[in-house]
Image (cartoon, rainbow, N blue to C red; front, side, top):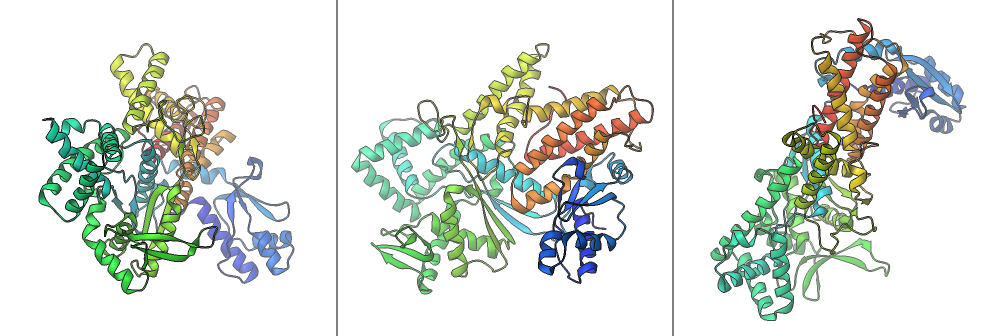
Length: 580
């Protein structure tokens, strides 16, 4: 039998009551969270708009709906308020029973989709010409969180790491490798120990040495034409570069492997065919020797359409061309129902043009949904994109190491009795978790300011606060390890117990929301609220000193809270700790 969330069950029940009261089927009840605790847990907000359409008085219509509402075990009290809101108070008996059913496993809390889809998620996608930098953090961890949530609720997920491994910059790098080998006897892996330094040196040589620049362009032609020696050098470079990426993924606990790689070079053989098909459909225009597509939907202030370049005047192809090939592959070969592109918001125009052209050219099935999951920029305290003091791009691996170092200092100062090895283990979890959570907890479409002090704080909506809340619950449970509360009946005798259970049971609603609109911040806010409610419960309701029966009930509620926190943090990609 399908397990619905509380909110979904209420929506269905009130939808049936609306149909009986009005004769209109499929009308949304608009069940939302109550705006204030004294109003209950949920509100039906759809009555006013429906009353306007029907020419009825909202409060009268609300009463007609209540008169036809089937009995609901979830509901303790209903109240018509204001101009026609219906407030819903949940029943203690229902909440206690649902909470008791979660003892030993919270699996019943996890919603399972009725319609499992094949969802392709394109995320991380670093440029292999350089090391991963801070600009790759958001796309990598947001994509990873969405993959975890969508997979957990039953969708078939195909990860796609569309790494940049082709094009002009690689001709430049190969030419520079060849130059170094001619000038020195240094081995390639040694030179690539610092990819960023290597890239900057190659780019500097390219910009100031016309002869070298010409050799770099010739290298591109040889690489794209399949010259075996250039392919061999290119593969060696890519291998070294991927090792740098994998070190970052391992440290971040990101679920991307070599099997998930679908680099730009994978689509190289399809690019000429894409251009030919666009030309045959009359979509290509010759502009200054290049082949471009002008879509009338996308114009500048001067009214002229923005070009989408498909093939350069020298015959080379661009990102847009490989993206078109990727869209077709994902729709036709992978048979995706949805394709999520977790990419910087600054690429919004590109993806709007890409999706429009892909559909116009028949490269994607009509029932395949293409979505740009856009995110904002990580900013420094100066309000500019996050850089080092010297103005250089910050390497992601160095940022993560800095987070671990700062967390070690914090943990050591708060726990001087812990040995160094234990402190370092804790610091890895706290440091990485703090960097990830600080990002995921922000509205993904907004820019945000990177602030070490804020993200490592034990106060507020931070990873340290949540990890500490979890360890505190675990320490309480360890003190009663000899108590058997696995078959306890949870009791509700205090308002804080009621509120905590309501929040626990809202996890499926939050996961459904994340799966629908792709904002991990919903889950972060939920976990923070859950931790705050547990602390209030802990302060208001003695656990270890409570009488028999009550003590077991409250221990069981603490155990369910810990399991819910662990589940939610895991879906964000954060590990938990038994002590801090």
